[in-house]
Image (cartoon, rainbow, N blue to C red):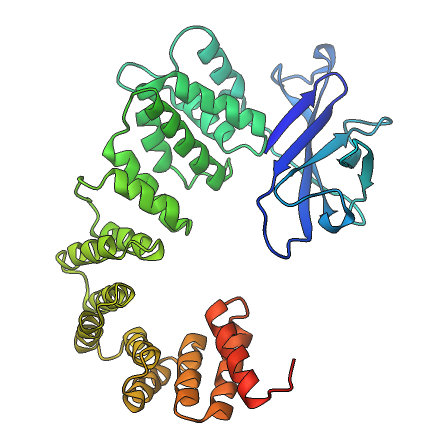
Length: 416
C-alpha cells in the first residue's frame, strides 16, 4: 500500500496492489479518523501543559469495495480517496471515493448506521513524540555508542512504531535505520517489552523487523539474539514463514530456552522444511522435557518422516510417542491416518483412531479420520455421518471438505 497526502486540503489518496485470488469479490475496510483539539495558548487552563489537548477522539466506520462493479482488474491497483467534511473537517467524517479506470470518482457509502466515537487518553507529556523528533533532528544520536538510550524517548519511539498512522510508523522506523547498529539494543529491549499497551503489538513487531532488515542491508549484521527473538515472536503470531526465516539466520546460535527448539521445529514443519524440523525436534528432546511433550514431539517427527516418504521411520516415531505416553490422542490419530492414506492395515487403523476418540471424543480431525477409514472399509454411509460432523466443526479445512465431497458423491450421487 502507498499513500499520498494533500496537506492543504486534508485529502488522502490510498492505493493497494492486489494479488489475484479466486472468488475475491468484496473488500471490507475499517476507517478511523483521529483528531485532537487544542486551546489557544491564552485560554489553556491553569496547570495544563503547552501541548495539552482539550479533546482527543477517534471516529470509526466501515465501508466496502465491491470488486465486481468493474472498477478493478485482478492484479492491478485500486485507488481510494478520502475527502474531509467541508462543514467540520475535524469532528465529522467526510467521504470515501474509489477512482475508476477512467479517473471518475465513485462515492462509497459508509456501512455503519452511525459512527463510533471514542475518547483517547492523550499521551503523557514526558513521552511526547516530539522528544524523538527533537533527538533525531538535533544531530545528536538517539542511541549512544553502545546502544544506550533515554527510557522516555524509547517509550515514545515504541508508541510511534506501533501507531496506526503509516507516516508515523515510517518516520519512527527511519530513526532506527539512521542510527544503524546502535539501534539493536533498543530492538532487543522492545521485543522483550511487548506487554506494554500503548501501541499495536503486531505493528511494532513488523516495524522492528523491517528496521533490522534495512540496517542489515547497510552492512550491519544483527546479533543472533535479535533473530532468535524475532523467530519466537513471529511463531507466537502464527507467521511460520517469517519465524522459520529468522530462526534460519541464527541457526548456528544455541537457543537459551529449550522450548524454542520445539517452536523452531514446528515453524519448519509448517513451512515444509521437514529435515530441519526433525533436527530441531531431536535437539528439543535432548533437553529432557516432560514426558507428554516428548510424546507430542515424537509424533511431530513422525509426521515429518511421513512427509519425506520415510514411512517406516514415521511409524517408529509414532509408536515411540505412544510408548512414552499411551494417552496421546494425537499420536494414535496420526498413525491411523498414515495407514489409511497408504491403504494398509485398515482394521488396525480403525482401532487406533477409536483410541484417539476415546481420549478426545469431540475432535473433528479424529472424526474425519474414522469416517475416512469406514469409507475405505466399505461403509461410506457411516463414514459420511462422521465426516459431516467434522466438516461442521472445521468448515474451512480443505482436506475434510474434500473427504466430505467424495463421500457425498458416493452415498448420494444426485446431490449437488
